[in-house]
Amino acid sequence: MLSALLAFTATLSAGLFAAKYKRNIGTVCAFTAGVLVALAFFDILPEILTLAPEIQVPLEMPLFTIAAGAFFLYVLDNRLFHMIKGSGGTGTRNNNPTLGTISALEFSAHGFIEGLAIGLSFQFEWSLGLVVAVAVISHDFCDGVSTLTLMLNSGNTMKFSMKMLFLDAVAPILGAVATLFFVIPDYFILFALSFLAGSFVYMGAGSLLPEAHRKNRPVVTLVFFLAGVTAIFVLSGMISA
Image (cartoon, rainbow, N blue to C red):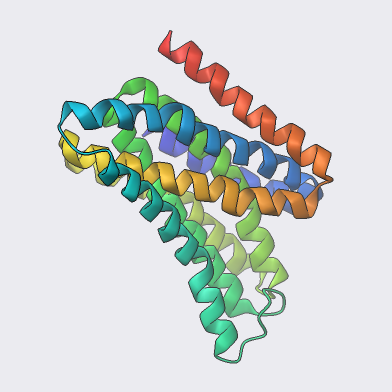
């Protein structure tokens, strides 16, 4: 719950950051992309490869679930946008309040999933939960910036934009609270971690990294991406030690 509250604080703080320093958000996105991709490969994937043989589950099944997690967030990020474009929308997020609101709801859905991830990871292993919490908090900072920026750029009022920012901020808490009411068996934790790994790969490589490339020079994006990867690599080693 403490981790979820920190994610809540990070999201709200990011909204205020967006209003003042949004030109610098590209470096934050690049760093967070590195954090999420490294977390999937350095922490979650090894846990999957260890747990699957222990509970006698063929490795093909969690690997398929990893792909499903990435595909799910791809659909979440893109399907509604293309539906509105095909129905006569402008195809752009600017000057389209409805599309800006839908984008904010997408970020809130991400936040709820990330809250579930924090709770499930702590149920499985304390050290994994800690690293997942760090990654989620970093990602929620970018989400908070994106939520407020998209809402305002699409023509919504500041008052309504702040309400959507609050919804985005509270979503991880709701996800974490949900995990307090049930304990998941190892079999389901395996697939939850697999789905989470795919989600983190997509959020890092498929969402945040392209955004960072649009906002930064290539060398800046590369440096901050590698910094995020290195940070998780070092943190994972410190926690496991």
